[in-house]
Amino acid sequence: MRVAIAKSNCYVPCRPHRHYHKRLVAKMKINGNSIRPGMIIEHKGNLWRAVKSQTTQPGKGGAYNQVELKNLRDGSKLNERFRAAQDVERVRLDEKPYQFLYADDEQLTFMDTENYEQVTLNIKVLGEASAFLQDGMEVMIQSYEGEVLYATLPDTVVVSVTETEPVVKGQTAASSFKPAVLANGLRTMVPPHIESGTEIIINTADGSYAERAKT
Image 1: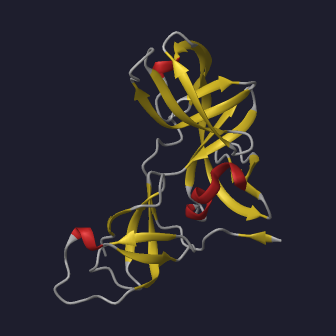
Image 2: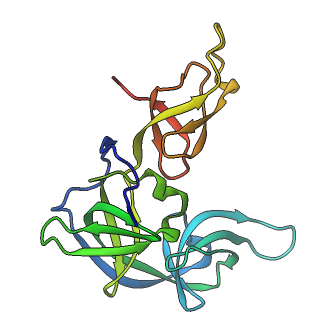
């Protein structure tokens, strides 16, 4: 069954336009302590995106980098320790803008607006971020040696709040964020002044509230 992720095409584009087509497929060796979030590395025969990294200096022994990795092919996660003396292959992917078309079961379909070529990506690879896809949204498709691996969404999208607690008069403290359900079904925390039906800007990287959308 063919199902579109979202009806609205209202979003905040924050990515390069079509002419900004980068061909950067390459490898380079870096030390383990240099791995930072967003980097793609080749590790244990697979390609991984670094999600989080934290350098730790233990009481004994050398410093190491604790890195949370996400498999670009199947979405699985891995936590690894990398030391400065450990060489890692950093991979640069080919990146090109595509337009999101629709979701069909577990597959997401995107179209190259220059030649109308279509590519698919398993929805598991994007995880919860797939809920922020909207009809016609431009994303950056990343591939390696012709294999489509990932789609990077705009940094932010506009989503409507469908359910949240009523506004309490005089309650304005930022620390008193309240839970809310978004139109795409995801949950987030919003300031106390946000009401049901309000359109807000959400960070697609973690689903967090950014600000109220301008009307």
